Image (cartoon, rainbow, N blue to C red; front, side):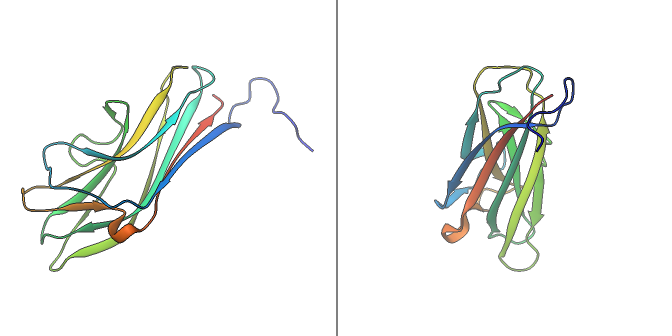
Length: 147
């Protein structure tokens, strides 16, 4: 059995932190991302990388409007400033769907970090974006990987 990687070899998972919830979160904001769930992790070395993964059940209730999801490290958006990491757009009717994504981060710190799953609508003040639609589970996981 392998009990350790050779010196200088990265890739070993050092820790996993996970948040799970079923509380439905909504927003009508199209100007800024609104936090829905968070997970905290404290890297053990500045060379560590963090893999953040999320899955949820999303919903958009307004025709021709998108729901946009992203991950923040503290106050830094790890996705695109306007399109986040994942977006789906409603066609002719209300649209519900499973949403999942991941991002690989190199925070270069050993201080505590909060990663947050956030959402916003593409446009319009009447559009509503959902996370954990109707109480479906949301999973937000942060894995520290040796650098």
